[in-house]
Image 1 (cartoon, rainbow, N blue to C red):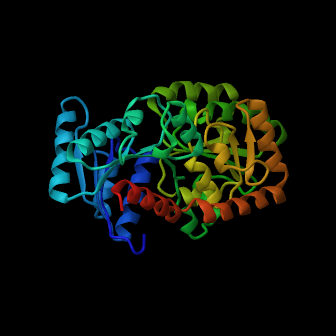
Image 2: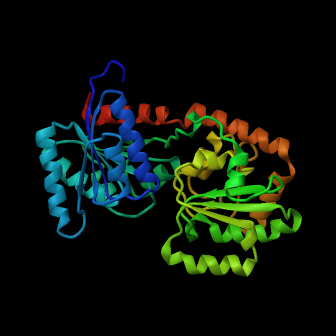
Image 3: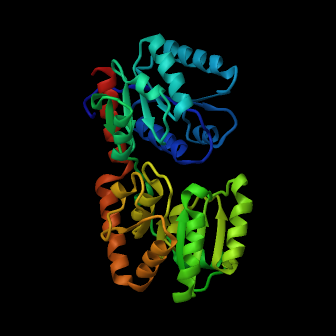
Length: 364
């Protein structure tokens, strides 16, 4: 892309919270602008993403995307196409993909849709035509799209990237002091929304057995707890009797700092199309225990950068015990994981690949 003409890209996402897709759009847009491209973001009103866009001087249009907002949002996109001269629209999440596909078709512009999550909506199959492109965040997602009858020529696999590789090392002791954890504690972390699908209940059940062998083990869950899950989660913690072995941090904006205090990280997800939390931990030189689910085996290499397990508490406990008992191997896994992130999962690699997708869509 160094010799190619800069592009004008309209990014559209139908959520503004602090989950992976929203962070992806923010990082992608910032890097595209740094490379000389023109970017504007369209997202729902009143969320984290809009505030971040203003902080980083990214042009943003906030709109109501539900109910009658369907018509207003489609009209907004068409006006931006006309006045901004955009080459293409890049959509994220299903509702946004409808907006992008419709407005792109009406304005004669290609649409690129990143498939972040697994679903069975027909919009992706309907989009697979002309110059439109579908971006799968893993080969697992690519296979899922194939299974819906979408031809391979419309699909590109582009792994997500992280900038956690760029941060300086943090002092783990400062984190321990902040949360009142002594130096004897072995911190096992899990970063992500606190919910059933991310495997928190499985982790609680597994650590109950881990504590029998390693009583100094301490869980740290980093992320917001989903309201509908809070009662079930609290009941599970009390039933397992691990209240004194668990720290809940809530939403944090210093995740690299917390990761540096972990002995290793875990990701026992029940469903995962990629696994951004896994590459973030690897970027900080941490081994990862992850479930053998979805796109995670493409990220975590079994017995090389971590351990892959089936969704059983006894197998998860066995993997956690193994890493607690084998420090040299654990550190070696973490070092290799960091190297792999440098080679494959940086934001730079991600943006390079997406620029190529944009060029194909724009016919350049």
